[in-house]
Length: 292
Image (cartoon, rainbow, N blue to C red; front, side, top):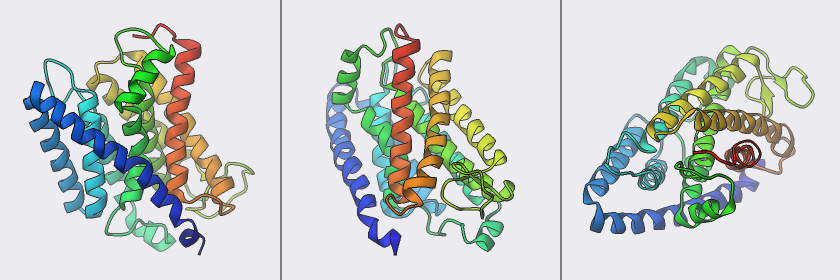
């Protein structure tokens, strides 16, 4: 009943992501078509292939796969450089997130089915994809990039938006892996607020194996992203630390606002990736004002 009452939050997440990101994809495609047609072919082609594969392996519904395709394409366009190399773009960290989520979701599926926590066989729905990957795409939009560049968070050769965008991607992977691995290997988890032992799958419950798995996932996505985006150890460190912050913030929201019936899972995931992005900007503002 609570999920049904809060379904409007999932729709709100979709409305906050898909129209803006979809419009940006169309505008970027038109712009690059006149100046850099090869980038358009590779970006739209690879994004579509990733979406199609995700749907065919039942990791996502058709609508979710389409949403992921739009988000991936926008992120790839925003990280396109010359000379053009598709593997030196946001495609690599997005692919890392997808592979980690796919593997973690299927690990120990029979046990999750016994616990009643297994993901539906049809895969993720569109609102889940938007909740997990929407923030990185929104941060990459041109108006946000301009605002960040003028904000004084960082200076140098690395675009400022790369830090919060990669941090949000790493948090999405960390959250999924932590939850899925924790249900299989974590035993009886504890609530992050009270440390009381609870049943696996409870909102706000954490376990040491699950948390460690989430940290490793965050490090993996941060590392692959830093390499693909031609970043350095600062981009890796800021993204990884911020992702871990977002992972813990996700558990805190789960133990409080979600547990109280104020937020649903999509809203929690969206806010958690946003918290990782925001924390990355704070780290830049206070520790590396001359990044790049």
